[in-house]
Every structure is written in C-alpha cells, then in structure tokens.
Length: 278
Image 1 (cartoon, rainbow, N blue to C red):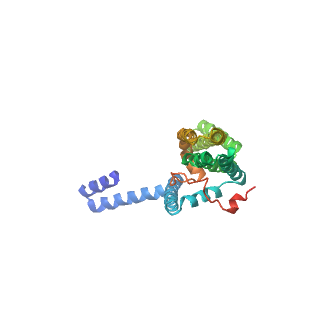
Image 2 (tube, rainbow, N blue to C red; image 1 turned 90 degrees about the vertical axis):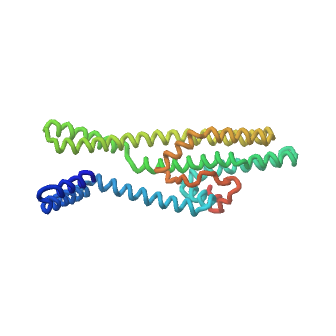
Image 3 (cartoon, rainbow, N blue to C red; image 1 turned 60 degrees about the vertical axis):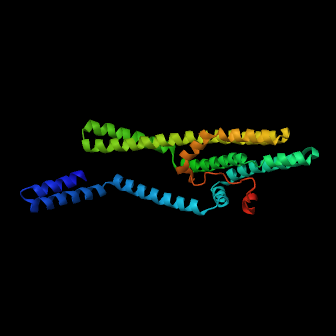
C-alpha cells in the first residue's frame, strides 16, 4: 500500500500526471491480478476465511448449548470402544459411591463419604479423561487418513528432482522444488508430531484412569470425606500439563474451548442410547 500510494503521489507531482496516474493504477491492478493467480495465496485466503467461519460457528455453538448438551456432543464424537471405556470408568465411580453408602451399615458417616465422591474435582478429572478420549479419536482419524510411507516417498521424490534440477541449473524449477521440498518436509514433521501426540495421549489416558480408580477406592477404604476431597483436588490441580496438551490438540479433536468448567458428569443424565453401549 505504501508503494501504491507513493507511486500515485509521484505520478501526481510528475510533469505528466494525466498519463502517469493511469499507469500507476494499471500496475497496481496487474499486481493484484497476479497475486490472486498464485495458488498458495488463494489457499491462505481460503484457510483464513474457513478459520473465521469455524470460529464463529464454535462461538455460536458454545454460547447456545448447555453444559449437558455439550457433554452429549462430546460423547457423540467418540468411537464405540472409547465411549465404552469412558462409561465403564464413570460406572466404577458410581459403584464406589454406592459401596461408600452401604459399607459397614454406618449411615451417617457413609452419607458423607458418598457425597464426597460427587466432588467437582472428580468431575474435572473425568472431564479431562473425556477430552483426552476425544483428542485421541481426532488423532486416530488424522493418522489413518495419511500414509507415513507415502509422505516419505513424496519427500524423497522431491529431493531427487531437486538434485536433478540443480545439476541442470534451471533456477525456475529449482525455486519451485525447494518450496515443494519445504512443504513435504513439513508434512513429514507434522505426521511425526501427531504420532508423538498420540503416544502421549495413550499414556495420559492410562495414568488418569488409574488415578481416578485409586482415588475413589481410597475414598471408600478410608471413609474420610475430607481426606478424599483433598486428594482429588490435588490430583485435578496437577493436570495443568495435560490440560495444555488438550488445548494444543483442539484443531484435530474438534474441541472448542467454550466449556471451561466441567459438567456434573457423575450426576448427568446421559440417556439410554449412550448408557446402553456394550
């Protein structure tokens, strides 16, 4: 824009403004026309517009859906195996709550213990476990849609062609192939990172699942609601690294950051369609 307006100013101050100004306008038009003919420029604009539309959709969706509706939406994103895993863990929590209510027949103390298993911090851990499952499903879809061998073959092919073009000293082809090489390497690196993210998610799922089970079993055995609540809160507060990893995976998982507070998962009505999953 500086060059354009500077050119117009110089054209207006020149001895022939009537001829210079149309020339400046013509050069600007030619520049814009050539810019729109570049595929990468068009892709960048399309990606920007798509991101804006996706952000508006997510904002609208997050603003209109209740926490329970968003919970159901996340559950609907899970494959059967992941949904079953989540439901089994939730069921384990409710079973421990029932055991806490009936153990040794001590009604007063047991009611406090059962109530402690409904702590919001436990819902937070379950919610994080659910978000990891959704992230895992997104990563699996991405990895299955892309072939690592195909990416490696493509990278090697571009490298071979680049060496040949450099030997032939054809600068146009060399420049184009260098750009293609950078893109091919970026795809290989992105695939490798996604695999690493997938490995991390698998480990974190196992860790959080084990931690939740250990905490709720501890809550029953100790019959101490205050101790249980403190342990669960400390465990939930220690998950900052995992929460950050989930945020970084939002583009693949389809998760929105609209729902920051976890829904009441243990008391939520998941409906017969979800609960009947075997």
